Length: 531
Ligand code: GLC
Picture (cartoon, rainbow, N blue to C red):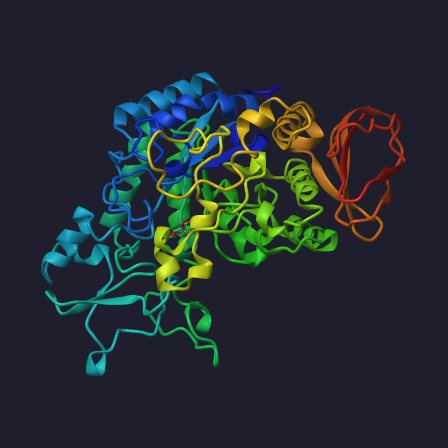
Protein backbone atom coordinates (compact mmCIF):
# COMPACT_ATOMS: atom_id res chain seq x y z
CA UNK A 1 0.00 0.00 0.00
CA UNK A 2 3.03 2.22 -0.49
CA UNK A 3 2.96 5.77 -1.71
CA UNK A 4 5.92 7.04 -3.66
CA UNK A 5 9.55 6.09 -3.52
CA UNK A 6 11.33 5.40 -0.24
CA UNK A 7 8.02 4.63 1.44
CA UNK A 8 8.82 2.67 4.56
CA UNK A 9 5.73 1.02 5.99
CA UNK A 10 6.47 1.31 9.72
CA UNK A 11 7.88 4.84 9.51
CA UNK A 12 5.66 6.52 6.94
CA UNK A 13 2.50 4.51 7.44
CA UNK A 14 -0.07 4.12 10.20
CA UNK A 15 -0.15 1.07 12.48
CA UNK A 16 -3.16 -0.50 14.17
CA UNK A 17 -3.28 -2.57 17.35
CA UNK A 18 -5.65 -5.51 17.56
CA UNK A 19 -6.45 -7.15 20.87
CA UNK A 20 -7.18 -10.54 19.26
CA UNK A 21 -9.61 -11.75 21.92
CA UNK A 22 -11.89 -8.87 21.06
CA UNK A 23 -11.63 -8.12 17.36
CA UNK A 24 -13.74 -10.78 15.64
CA UNK A 25 -14.88 -14.23 16.67
CA UNK A 26 -15.25 -16.58 13.70
CA UNK A 27 -15.95 -19.84 15.57
CA UNK A 28 -18.63 -18.72 18.01
CA UNK A 29 -16.77 -19.40 21.27
CA UNK A 30 -17.07 -15.77 22.35
CA UNK A 31 -13.36 -15.06 21.96
CA UNK A 32 -11.86 -13.41 18.88
CA UNK A 33 -9.52 -15.43 16.64
CA UNK A 34 -7.17 -15.24 13.66
CA UNK A 35 -9.83 -16.33 11.19
CA UNK A 36 -12.02 -13.51 12.51
CA UNK A 37 -9.23 -11.02 11.86
CA UNK A 38 -8.77 -12.41 8.36
CA UNK A 39 -12.46 -11.93 7.61
CA UNK A 40 -12.27 -8.33 8.76
CA UNK A 41 -9.14 -7.38 6.83
CA UNK A 42 -11.35 -5.30 4.53
CA UNK A 43 -11.99 -2.89 7.38
CA UNK A 44 -8.27 -2.33 7.88
CA UNK A 45 -7.69 -1.92 4.17
CA UNK A 46 -10.44 0.69 3.83
CA UNK A 47 -9.08 2.49 6.88
CA UNK A 48 -5.74 2.68 5.07
CA UNK A 49 -3.37 1.33 7.72
CA UNK A 50 -0.03 -0.28 6.83
CA UNK A 51 0.54 -2.72 9.65
CA UNK A 52 -1.23 -4.56 12.42
CA UNK A 53 0.18 -5.29 15.85
CA UNK A 54 -1.46 -8.34 17.36
CA UNK A 55 -1.38 -8.61 21.14
CA UNK A 56 -0.03 -12.11 21.99
CA UNK A 57 -1.54 -15.10 20.20
CA UNK A 58 0.96 -17.71 21.47
CA UNK A 59 -0.04 -20.74 23.57
CA UNK A 60 -0.71 -19.45 27.05
CA UNK A 61 -2.56 -20.38 30.22
CA UNK A 62 -4.03 -16.85 29.81
CA UNK A 63 -3.36 -15.77 33.37
CA UNK A 64 -2.46 -12.38 31.86
CA UNK A 65 -4.37 -13.03 28.63
CA UNK A 66 -1.42 -14.09 26.52
CA UNK A 67 1.30 -11.99 28.15
CA UNK A 68 2.21 -15.24 29.92
CA UNK A 69 3.70 -17.21 27.04
CA UNK A 70 4.04 -21.00 27.28
CA UNK A 71 5.51 -21.47 23.78
CA UNK A 72 6.94 -18.66 21.66
CA UNK A 73 6.72 -20.67 18.45
CA UNK A 74 3.10 -21.65 18.09
CA UNK A 75 -0.45 -20.28 18.13
CA UNK A 76 -2.85 -20.86 21.00
CA UNK A 77 -5.72 -23.12 19.82
CA UNK A 78 -8.12 -20.46 21.11
CA UNK A 79 -6.93 -18.22 18.27
CA UNK A 80 -6.39 -20.91 15.61
CA UNK A 81 -3.41 -22.72 14.15
CA UNK A 82 -0.09 -21.89 12.57
CA UNK A 83 -1.83 -22.55 9.26
CA UNK A 84 -4.41 -19.86 10.08
CA UNK A 85 -1.60 -17.52 10.98
CA UNK A 86 0.27 -18.13 7.72
CA UNK A 87 -2.92 -17.56 5.78
CA UNK A 88 -3.56 -14.30 7.63
CA UNK A 89 -0.01 -13.06 7.06
CA UNK A 90 -0.21 -13.97 3.37
CA UNK A 91 -3.60 -12.37 2.72
CA UNK A 92 -2.69 -9.29 4.75
CA UNK A 93 0.52 -8.98 2.77
CA UNK A 94 -1.41 -9.16 -0.50
CA UNK A 95 -3.44 -6.21 0.75
CA UNK A 96 -0.29 -4.25 1.71
CA UNK A 97 -0.53 -4.94 5.43
CA UNK A 98 2.33 -6.26 7.61
CA UNK A 99 1.75 -8.19 10.80
CA UNK A 100 3.61 -7.28 13.98
CA UNK A 101 3.74 -9.88 16.74
CA UNK A 102 3.84 -9.10 20.44
CA UNK A 103 7.06 -10.64 21.74
CA UNK A 104 7.34 -10.99 25.51
CA UNK A 105 11.04 -11.34 26.39
CA UNK A 106 11.01 -10.25 30.03
CA UNK A 107 9.11 -13.27 31.35
CA UNK A 108 7.44 -16.52 30.34
CA UNK A 109 4.45 -18.33 31.73
CA UNK A 110 5.18 -20.55 34.72
CA UNK A 111 3.92 -23.34 32.45
CA UNK A 112 6.60 -22.75 29.82
CA UNK A 113 8.73 -25.93 29.52
CA UNK A 114 11.84 -23.83 30.21
CA UNK A 115 10.46 -22.77 33.56
CA UNK A 116 9.16 -26.24 34.40
CA UNK A 117 12.66 -27.51 33.71
CA UNK A 118 14.30 -24.73 35.68
CA UNK A 119 12.12 -25.37 38.72
CA UNK A 120 12.48 -29.17 38.50
CA UNK A 121 15.63 -29.23 40.65
CA UNK A 122 18.35 -26.98 42.01
CA UNK A 123 20.75 -28.34 39.42
CA UNK A 124 18.58 -28.00 36.32
CA UNK A 125 20.63 -26.81 33.32
CA UNK A 126 18.03 -24.10 32.78
CA UNK A 127 18.21 -22.88 36.40
CA UNK A 128 20.02 -19.74 35.35
CA UNK A 129 17.50 -18.91 32.60
CA UNK A 130 15.37 -17.43 35.40
CA UNK A 131 16.17 -15.76 38.74
CA UNK A 132 16.36 -18.30 41.56
CA UNK A 133 17.70 -17.18 44.91
CA UNK A 134 17.96 -18.49 48.46
CA UNK A 135 15.87 -16.70 51.05
CA UNK A 136 17.34 -13.96 53.14
CA UNK A 137 17.82 -14.32 56.89
CA UNK A 138 14.58 -15.48 58.51
CA UNK A 139 13.20 -16.74 55.19
CA UNK A 140 12.50 -13.32 53.71
CA UNK A 141 12.66 -12.64 49.95
CA UNK A 142 16.13 -11.94 48.50
CA UNK A 143 15.44 -8.21 48.06
CA UNK A 144 12.67 -5.65 48.40
CA UNK A 145 11.56 -5.45 44.77
CA UNK A 146 7.82 -5.16 44.23
CA UNK A 147 5.82 -6.54 41.35
CA UNK A 148 4.22 -4.08 38.91
CA UNK A 149 1.01 -5.95 39.66
CA UNK A 150 1.22 -5.56 43.45
CA UNK A 151 2.96 -7.43 46.25
CA UNK A 152 6.54 -8.68 46.41
CA UNK A 153 8.27 -9.65 43.16
CA UNK A 154 9.47 -12.96 44.68
CA UNK A 155 7.55 -16.22 44.99
CA UNK A 156 8.59 -19.04 47.28
CA UNK A 157 8.95 -22.46 45.69
CA UNK A 158 8.43 -25.28 48.16
CA UNK A 159 10.07 -27.97 46.07
CA UNK A 160 13.42 -26.26 45.56
CA UNK A 161 13.23 -24.10 48.67
CA UNK A 162 14.19 -21.01 46.76
CA UNK A 163 12.49 -17.85 45.61
CA UNK A 164 12.00 -16.91 41.96
CA UNK A 165 11.57 -13.43 40.57
CA UNK A 166 8.43 -12.21 38.83
CA UNK A 167 8.03 -8.54 37.96
CA UNK A 168 4.36 -9.11 37.19
CA UNK A 169 2.11 -12.04 38.20
CA UNK A 170 3.65 -14.96 40.04
CA UNK A 171 2.66 -16.99 36.97
CA UNK A 172 5.08 -14.79 34.92
CA UNK A 173 8.62 -15.67 36.07
CA UNK A 174 11.28 -13.23 34.81
CA UNK A 175 13.83 -14.42 32.27
CA UNK A 176 17.53 -13.85 32.83
CA UNK A 177 18.93 -12.02 29.80
CA UNK A 178 22.46 -12.34 31.18
CA UNK A 179 22.44 -16.04 30.34
CA UNK A 180 23.83 -16.51 26.79
CA UNK A 181 21.88 -19.73 26.16
CA UNK A 182 18.63 -18.00 27.01
CA UNK A 183 19.54 -15.16 24.68
CA UNK A 184 20.17 -17.64 21.86
CA UNK A 185 16.90 -19.44 22.51
CA UNK A 186 14.96 -16.17 22.48
CA UNK A 187 16.69 -15.01 19.30
CA UNK A 188 15.62 -18.28 17.69
CA UNK A 189 11.99 -17.46 18.47
CA UNK A 190 12.37 -14.19 16.57
CA UNK A 191 13.85 -16.01 13.59
CA UNK A 192 10.97 -18.48 13.65
CA UNK A 193 8.44 -15.70 12.97
CA UNK A 194 10.67 -13.63 10.70
CA UNK A 195 11.01 -16.66 8.42
CA UNK A 196 7.20 -16.88 8.36
CA UNK A 197 7.06 -13.34 7.03
CA UNK A 198 6.04 -11.18 9.96
CA UNK A 199 6.87 -7.49 9.61
CA UNK A 200 8.27 -7.18 13.08
CA UNK A 201 7.65 -7.19 16.79
CA UNK A 202 6.21 -5.11 19.55
CA UNK A 203 8.51 -5.86 22.48
CA UNK A 204 6.74 -6.14 25.82
CA UNK A 205 8.06 -4.48 29.04
CA UNK A 206 11.44 -3.88 27.48
CA UNK A 207 12.47 -1.61 30.37
CA UNK A 208 12.40 -4.65 32.67
CA UNK A 209 14.40 -7.00 30.47
CA UNK A 210 17.61 -6.48 32.42
CA UNK A 211 18.20 -5.86 36.07
CA UNK A 212 20.95 -4.88 38.41
CA UNK A 213 23.36 -7.88 38.43
CA UNK A 214 23.65 -7.64 42.21
CA UNK A 215 19.87 -7.50 42.64
CA UNK A 216 20.28 -4.58 45.06
CA UNK A 217 17.29 -3.24 46.99
CA UNK A 218 15.32 -0.39 45.43
CA UNK A 219 15.16 2.77 47.55
CA UNK A 220 11.81 3.00 49.34
CA UNK A 221 9.59 6.06 48.99
CA UNK A 222 8.39 6.80 52.51
CA UNK A 223 4.64 6.92 52.97
CA UNK A 224 3.76 5.36 49.59
CA UNK A 225 2.47 1.79 49.43
CA UNK A 226 2.08 -0.60 46.48
CA UNK A 227 4.25 -0.80 43.32
CA UNK A 228 4.75 2.99 43.49
CA UNK A 229 6.29 2.72 46.94
CA UNK A 230 9.84 2.36 45.67
CA UNK A 231 12.11 3.91 43.09
CA UNK A 232 12.56 1.18 40.51
CA UNK A 233 16.19 2.01 39.82
CA UNK A 234 17.57 -1.55 40.04
CA UNK A 235 14.79 -3.58 38.40
CA UNK A 236 13.93 -1.13 35.61
CA UNK A 237 15.74 0.68 32.81
CA UNK A 238 19.09 -0.97 33.53
CA UNK A 239 21.73 0.35 31.08
CA UNK A 240 22.64 -3.21 30.02
CA UNK A 241 19.30 -3.45 28.21
CA UNK A 242 20.91 -1.49 25.38
CA UNK A 243 23.43 -4.21 24.56
CA UNK A 244 20.58 -6.74 24.47
CA UNK A 245 18.66 -4.50 22.09
CA UNK A 246 21.65 -4.13 19.80
CA UNK A 247 21.76 -7.91 19.56
CA UNK A 248 18.10 -8.02 18.59
CA UNK A 249 18.56 -5.20 16.07
CA UNK A 250 21.46 -6.98 14.40
CA UNK A 251 19.25 -10.02 14.02
CA UNK A 252 16.36 -8.00 12.53
CA UNK A 253 18.71 -6.20 10.17
CA UNK A 254 19.47 -9.57 8.61
CA UNK A 255 15.98 -9.45 7.09
CA UNK A 256 14.33 -7.01 4.75
CA UNK A 257 12.30 -4.07 6.16
CA UNK A 258 11.52 -5.58 9.55
CA UNK A 259 11.00 -3.51 12.65
CA UNK A 260 10.77 -3.52 16.42
CA UNK A 261 8.71 -1.17 18.55
CA UNK A 262 9.33 -1.29 22.26
CA UNK A 263 7.07 -0.81 25.22
CA UNK A 264 9.31 1.53 27.19
CA UNK A 265 7.02 2.24 30.12
CA UNK A 266 9.03 5.16 31.39
CA UNK A 267 7.69 8.68 31.52
CA UNK A 268 10.96 10.51 30.98
CA UNK A 269 11.33 11.21 27.23
CA UNK A 270 15.12 11.52 27.49
CA UNK A 271 15.29 7.96 28.88
CA UNK A 272 12.85 6.64 26.29
CA UNK A 273 14.96 8.20 23.54
CA UNK A 274 17.97 6.14 24.62
CA UNK A 275 16.17 3.02 23.39
CA UNK A 276 16.82 4.15 19.81
CA UNK A 277 20.55 3.89 20.44
CA UNK A 278 22.49 5.26 17.50
CA UNK A 279 19.99 3.83 15.10
CA UNK A 280 21.17 0.40 16.25
CA UNK A 281 18.50 -0.44 18.84
CA UNK A 282 14.73 0.00 18.49
CA UNK A 283 13.18 1.30 15.27
CA UNK A 284 10.40 2.82 17.36
CA UNK A 285 10.07 3.40 21.09
CA UNK A 286 6.63 4.06 22.51
CA UNK A 287 6.43 7.42 24.19
CA UNK A 288 3.48 7.08 26.54
CA UNK A 289 3.37 10.68 27.73
CA UNK A 290 0.14 11.36 25.81
CA UNK A 291 -1.57 8.67 27.87
CA UNK A 292 -1.25 10.93 30.89
CA UNK A 293 -1.89 14.29 29.24
CA UNK A 294 -4.97 16.21 30.23
CA UNK A 295 -7.17 17.70 27.51
CA UNK A 296 -5.22 20.87 27.10
CA UNK A 297 -3.42 22.42 24.12
CA UNK A 298 -0.42 23.48 26.20
CA UNK A 299 -0.07 20.01 27.76
CA UNK A 300 0.08 18.26 24.38
CA UNK A 301 2.38 20.91 22.96
CA UNK A 302 4.68 20.42 25.93
CA UNK A 303 4.80 16.64 25.43
CA UNK A 304 5.46 16.95 21.70
CA UNK A 305 8.24 19.49 22.17
CA UNK A 306 9.84 17.43 24.94
CA UNK A 307 10.04 14.37 22.72
CA UNK A 308 11.06 16.29 19.61
CA UNK A 309 14.00 17.68 21.58
CA UNK A 310 15.43 14.27 22.47
CA UNK A 311 14.64 11.78 19.68
CA UNK A 312 17.97 11.17 17.99
CA UNK A 313 18.56 12.00 14.36
CA UNK A 314 18.43 8.30 13.45
CA UNK A 315 15.25 7.76 15.46
CA UNK A 316 11.63 8.35 14.61
CA UNK A 317 8.87 9.16 17.15
CA UNK A 318 5.70 7.17 17.80
CA UNK A 319 2.34 8.54 18.80
CA UNK A 320 -0.29 6.73 20.77
CA UNK A 321 -3.42 7.76 22.62
CA UNK A 322 -4.90 4.39 23.58
CA UNK A 323 -3.89 0.78 24.07
CA UNK A 324 -4.98 -2.34 25.94
CA UNK A 325 -3.51 -1.15 29.25
CA UNK A 326 -5.12 2.27 29.67
CA UNK A 327 -8.65 3.66 29.51
CA UNK A 328 -9.64 4.55 25.95
CA UNK A 329 -8.91 8.17 25.12
CA UNK A 330 -12.49 8.85 23.99
CA UNK A 331 -13.40 8.05 27.61
CA UNK A 332 -10.48 9.88 29.18
CA UNK A 333 -11.40 13.05 27.30
CA UNK A 334 -15.14 12.51 27.28
CA UNK A 335 -17.42 15.45 27.93
CA UNK A 336 -21.23 15.62 27.82
CA UNK A 337 -21.19 18.29 25.15
CA UNK A 338 -17.76 18.13 23.55
CA UNK A 339 -16.81 14.45 23.82
CA UNK A 340 -17.47 13.61 20.16
CA UNK A 341 -15.66 16.73 18.95
CA UNK A 342 -12.67 15.96 21.13
CA UNK A 343 -12.37 12.46 19.66
CA UNK A 344 -12.16 14.13 16.23
CA UNK A 345 -9.55 16.66 17.32
CA UNK A 346 -7.53 13.85 18.96
CA UNK A 347 -7.63 11.88 15.69
CA UNK A 348 -6.42 14.87 13.72
CA UNK A 349 -3.58 15.46 16.14
CA UNK A 350 -2.46 11.82 16.15
CA UNK A 351 -2.52 11.60 12.37
CA UNK A 352 -0.77 14.90 11.60
CA UNK A 353 2.09 14.99 14.11
CA UNK A 354 5.60 13.72 13.34
CA UNK A 355 5.91 10.05 14.21
CA UNK A 356 4.25 6.74 13.51
CA UNK A 357 0.68 6.72 14.85
CA UNK A 358 -0.58 3.58 16.57
CA UNK A 359 -4.37 3.28 16.57
CA UNK A 360 -6.09 1.00 19.05
CA UNK A 361 -8.94 -1.07 17.57
CA UNK A 362 -12.26 0.74 17.92
CA UNK A 363 -10.84 4.21 18.36
CA UNK A 364 -11.72 4.88 14.72
CA UNK A 365 -15.40 4.67 15.70
CA UNK A 366 -14.90 6.45 19.02
CA UNK A 367 -15.35 3.39 21.22
CA UNK A 368 -15.60 4.21 24.90
CA UNK A 369 -14.67 2.13 27.92
CA UNK A 370 -17.37 -0.40 28.78
CA UNK A 371 -18.43 -0.72 32.42
CA UNK A 372 -17.76 -4.26 33.67
CA UNK A 373 -20.08 -5.78 36.29
CA UNK A 374 -18.14 -7.36 39.15
CA UNK A 375 -19.07 -10.91 38.20
CA UNK A 376 -17.59 -10.45 34.70
CA UNK A 377 -14.21 -9.03 35.69
CA UNK A 378 -11.38 -10.91 33.95
CA UNK A 379 -8.23 -8.83 34.28
CA UNK A 380 -5.99 -10.26 37.03
CA UNK A 381 -4.82 -6.82 38.15
CA UNK A 382 -8.38 -5.80 38.91
CA UNK A 383 -8.01 -8.40 41.65
CA UNK A 384 -4.38 -7.92 42.74
CA UNK A 385 -4.32 -4.14 42.65
CA UNK A 386 -7.70 -2.50 42.65
CA UNK A 387 -10.87 -2.98 40.57
CA UNK A 388 -10.50 0.64 39.43
CA UNK A 389 -7.23 -0.12 37.60
CA UNK A 390 -8.68 -3.17 35.83
CA UNK A 391 -8.12 -3.12 32.06
CA UNK A 392 -11.24 -4.99 30.94
CA UNK A 393 -13.22 -1.80 30.12
CA UNK A 394 -10.86 -0.95 27.25
CA UNK A 395 -10.71 -4.54 25.98
CA UNK A 396 -14.37 -5.20 25.15
CA UNK A 397 -15.43 -6.54 21.74
CA UNK A 398 -15.14 -4.46 18.60
CA UNK A 399 -18.47 -2.93 17.70
CA UNK A 400 -19.18 -3.92 14.11
CA UNK A 401 -22.95 -4.02 13.75
CA UNK A 402 -26.00 -2.64 15.53
CA UNK A 403 -27.05 -6.03 16.92
CA UNK A 404 -26.87 -7.35 20.50
CA UNK A 405 -23.56 -9.11 19.95
CA UNK A 406 -22.25 -6.15 17.93
CA UNK A 407 -21.53 -8.47 14.99
CA UNK A 408 -18.56 -9.77 17.01
CA UNK A 409 -19.72 -13.28 17.87
CA UNK A 410 -22.51 -15.83 17.55
CA UNK A 411 -21.80 -16.94 21.09
CA UNK A 412 -21.50 -15.36 24.51
CA UNK A 413 -18.79 -12.66 24.33
CA UNK A 414 -15.95 -13.12 26.82
CA UNK A 415 -16.40 -9.51 27.98
CA UNK A 416 -19.65 -7.55 27.76
CA UNK A 417 -20.49 -5.61 24.61
CA UNK A 418 -20.45 -1.84 25.03
CA UNK A 419 -23.92 -0.49 25.85
CA UNK A 420 -23.52 2.07 23.06
CA UNK A 421 -22.83 -0.58 20.37
CA UNK A 422 -26.29 -0.20 18.84
CA UNK A 423 -25.54 3.39 17.87
CA UNK A 424 -21.73 3.35 17.76
CA UNK A 425 -20.55 0.74 15.29
CA UNK A 426 -18.68 0.30 12.04
CA UNK A 427 -21.77 -0.47 9.91
CA UNK A 428 -23.56 2.76 10.82
CA UNK A 429 -20.47 4.94 10.48
CA UNK A 430 -19.67 3.35 7.15
CA UNK A 431 -22.91 4.79 5.76
CA UNK A 432 -22.36 8.28 7.18
CA UNK A 433 -19.73 10.34 5.39
CA UNK A 434 -19.55 12.75 8.35
CA UNK A 435 -18.71 9.97 10.84
CA UNK A 436 -15.53 9.62 12.87
CA UNK A 437 -14.66 6.51 10.86
CA UNK A 438 -14.63 8.54 7.65
CA UNK A 439 -12.57 11.26 9.30
CA UNK A 440 -9.93 8.64 10.21
CA UNK A 441 -9.97 7.30 6.66
CA UNK A 442 -9.61 10.75 5.14
CA UNK A 443 -6.90 11.83 7.57
CA UNK A 444 -4.92 8.67 6.85
CA UNK A 445 -5.34 9.18 3.10
CA UNK A 446 -4.25 12.83 3.35
CA UNK A 447 -1.27 11.85 5.48
CA UNK A 448 -0.29 9.27 2.88
CA UNK A 449 -0.38 11.57 -0.11
CA UNK A 450 1.24 14.55 1.67
CA UNK A 451 4.98 14.04 2.24
CA UNK A 452 5.03 16.86 4.84
CA UNK A 453 2.57 14.88 6.95
CA UNK A 454 4.18 11.45 6.81
CA UNK A 455 7.83 12.45 6.66
CA UNK A 456 8.16 16.15 7.42
CA UNK A 457 9.90 18.03 10.20
CA UNK A 458 7.84 19.47 13.02
CA UNK A 459 7.69 23.04 14.20
CA UNK A 460 5.32 24.63 16.71
CA UNK A 461 3.33 27.69 15.62
CA UNK A 462 2.61 30.00 18.54
CA UNK A 463 -1.12 30.49 18.86
CA UNK A 464 -3.95 31.73 21.02
CA UNK A 465 -4.59 30.14 24.40
CA UNK A 466 -6.25 26.77 23.98
CA UNK A 467 -4.94 26.23 20.45
CA UNK A 468 -2.16 23.81 19.53
CA UNK A 469 -0.79 24.64 16.09
CA UNK A 470 2.18 23.38 14.13
CA UNK A 471 3.80 23.14 10.76
CA UNK A 472 5.09 20.05 9.03
CA UNK A 473 7.53 20.43 6.18
CA UNK A 474 9.37 18.10 3.83
CA UNK A 475 11.09 19.75 0.87
CA UNK A 476 8.38 21.49 -1.16
CA UNK A 477 5.58 19.87 0.79
CA UNK A 478 4.14 21.97 3.65
CA UNK A 479 1.18 21.35 5.93
CA UNK A 480 -0.15 23.40 8.82
CA UNK A 481 -2.45 22.26 11.57
CA UNK A 482 -4.47 24.11 14.21
CA UNK A 483 -6.36 22.30 16.94
CA UNK A 484 -8.74 24.15 19.22
CA UNK A 485 -8.82 22.38 22.57
CA UNK A 486 -11.04 25.06 24.08
CA UNK A 487 -14.80 25.26 24.10
CA UNK A 488 -14.95 28.68 22.50
CA UNK A 489 -14.21 29.86 18.99
CA UNK A 490 -10.58 30.77 18.36
CA UNK A 491 -8.53 32.28 15.61
CA UNK A 492 -5.18 30.86 14.55
CA UNK A 493 -2.70 32.57 12.28
CA UNK A 494 -1.28 29.84 10.08
CA UNK A 495 0.90 32.12 7.97
CA UNK A 496 0.92 32.70 4.21
CA UNK A 497 0.24 30.18 1.48
CA UNK A 498 -2.46 28.88 -0.83
CA UNK A 499 -4.42 25.81 0.21
CA UNK A 500 -4.22 22.74 -1.96
CA UNK A 501 -6.03 20.22 0.22
CA UNK A 502 -7.05 19.75 3.80
CA UNK A 503 -9.64 18.61 6.29
CA UNK A 504 -11.71 20.04 9.07
CA UNK A 505 -12.80 17.91 11.99
CA UNK A 506 -16.28 19.36 11.51
CA UNK A 507 -17.50 18.64 8.06
CA UNK A 508 -19.69 21.09 6.26
CA UNK A 509 -17.62 24.23 6.74
CA UNK A 510 -15.58 24.76 3.57
CA UNK A 511 -11.80 24.96 3.64
CA UNK A 512 -10.28 28.43 3.21
CA UNK A 513 -8.61 29.16 -0.11
CA UNK A 514 -5.63 30.72 1.54
CA UNK A 515 -3.94 29.87 4.82
CA UNK A 516 -3.65 33.08 6.90
CA UNK A 517 -5.98 33.66 9.83
CA UNK A 518 -8.22 30.66 10.27
CA UNK A 519 -11.34 30.72 12.38
CA UNK A 520 -11.94 27.58 14.43
CA UNK A 521 -15.17 26.62 16.11
CA UNK A 522 -15.13 25.23 19.69
CA UNK A 523 -13.24 21.88 19.81
CA UNK A 524 -12.46 22.07 16.14
CA UNK A 525 -9.31 21.23 14.20
CA UNK A 526 -8.06 21.95 10.71
CA UNK A 527 -5.20 20.62 8.62
CA UNK A 528 -4.17 22.42 5.46
CA UNK A 529 -1.74 21.18 2.84
CA UNK A 530 -0.24 24.10 0.97
CA UNK A 531 0.60 24.55 -2.68
C1 GLC B 1 2.82 -5.17 29.27
C2 GLC B 1 1.51 -5.44 28.59
C3 GLC B 1 0.48 -5.72 29.63
C4 GLC B 1 0.93 -6.93 30.41
C5 GLC B 1 2.32 -6.71 31.00
C6 GLC B 1 2.91 -7.95 31.56
O1 GLC B 1 2.77 -4.04 30.05
O2 GLC B 1 1.16 -4.35 27.76
O3 GLC B 1 -0.78 -5.94 29.06
O4 GLC B 1 0.02 -7.19 31.44
O5 GLC B 1 3.20 -6.27 30.01
O6 GLC B 1 3.36 -8.80 30.53
